[in-house]
Image (cartoon, rainbow, N blue to C red):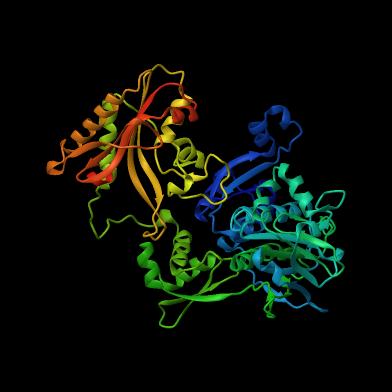
Length: 589
């Protein structure tokens, strides 16, 4: 859940009254939020960096409020205050309007070169807006919250805000070679090419996380005004020429991205939250966007839509007995203007542009339940009785964990993600032969793929505990993941048991003995007859030649055991012999 930090005194001033911490905590709970922490900037810095760094920091009390991830309208002070005021029936929900300018409409032209990079763009103008320091800070912070949330760290949508009075329309959104883009970026003193900027920002703690989005593209997206001034190079940085300040009166907002729907939602959220500071409150000036297919659209959409829900459906789903009129009133308090129509059981709900989270009737039912109060819903016995049962695979796993531990092995729990090197190169395999599921844009080289075997995790655990007394006997029973085109998600999990013995001698007989004990517990007799198990000589790149065996049970190959190859042991920074066993336990259910 996103956390919104607001200054307590500023919040109470906007709400028109003060609360004790306990009262505000209760108000948040009633509204479906959670007051997570009461702190200050000084206290935060003191915790993270120490008291010395905290000297001189602000003592202003901050409320940290947890907001549902899909409530984009509550990610700033303005939206939070407006939502609470409507909830407490102190104000009516405002009506947001798109207006045409008195003169010529601003125009954003999208060229076809953007098609392979970031094909979509939308825009709007906040005219005659009045910023203060707090309003400006909230405006910037909302953009950052949206970037981290619905924009998926700018991968889907990037927001650019500009001082319109420093620019001259129409604007052009195009894509060019990095060497052909040159401008002075935000808060820099001289011009740089796009190539130079990408190198500069590789050491920037904030912007380096976004470089990968366009770094490998032959063309970079860029927005110009009619004089060739660069507004921004999305999704990386804005131009310094058009940066907004507290004194900015007219703000040009552009959202570019790969998801058209989300770009429109983001634009709607920004303009609805801050249009209250415009000279004509809750009005937003339209911008015409011309697309490469010669079609033009006007943004922001600020679309209102209507949904119909039956009162008896809400009562049934929530478990209450309220009249349609009362339910309509509850929904209106949740920023969903509602009225009873038709046969007296139908409720018509108006969904404002701020509530992009309302997708289905169940979302409306949830809001009715929040407004009614979860604590006010009477507890009742369910009409249907069912008896819960443990998932068979998990039950088998728990039983095996106890008995393998009783056999003298220590359980380890390792990461489900690992590097390509761990499951391929270090085990003498080619990555293409592992059927590994790869992670898109991994944050670190340690978490590139989902593991296809439990062995590397246990060997890395032993490497981290080499100073412990020998022998080291570890086991793990967890899932591995491999590609499977027959599955709707393209991959399948298998529950594996892996055990490793590390000592001055290989200890193959100990691992073999553990296999016999596991098969005894699974009621699988030795021998090929009557559904028994056998081991047969085999080979594997991870094992010492002539010291590897394949395990067959009930006619199926379920795994391997053997002495690991010295090269494998060395690659995992180990120095002594090691034997291992890994089997799939799912065939034994």
